[in-house]
Amino acid sequence: MAEKEYILTRDGKAELEKELDTLKNVTRKEVSAKIKEARSFGDLSENAEYDEAKKEQAEVESRISQIETMLKYANVIDAEDIKSDIVTLGSKLTLEIFGTEDQYTIVGSTEADPYKNKLSYESPIGAACLNHSVGETVQAITPSGPLDIKIVAIEK
Image (tube, rainbow, N blue to C red; front, side):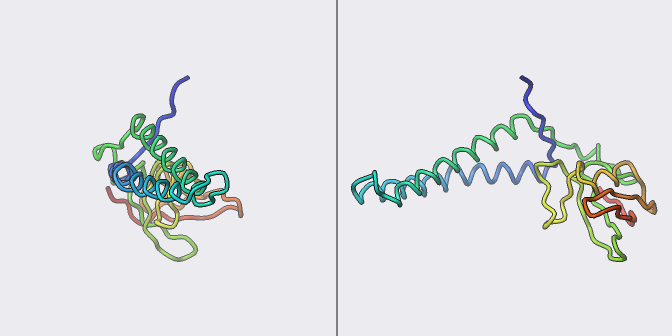
């Protein structure tokens, strides 16, 4: 079975590499120390601290594996592929929504974080803006209904 491709910006790849390094070199050691301490409490069959530390260890190892897979199959957006005349993956946009202007970046789904104004190209707003230019008003079909969005500026 072919592995999924993960579309990342250079910044997104760097963030994943940093997270992976922290998980492998800091978090793993901290969790290992928690397990060692919990073992010292004795009977493991009724040791909540041990159970919690083992659960945390499993979560850390799962995230490490997930990040390694994402980096292995990453398709990093080249700066040359980012346009300043039309919206593409990696574009930094100023959008006007409901009369208010905000800046957003169009990213792959693994990097999307609406709280940091990083919109997936697969999201209703990201998809509606793709391949459009400054000055255009596009309509995104959102769960709460159609939404008109004006593209005010595009940057690399």
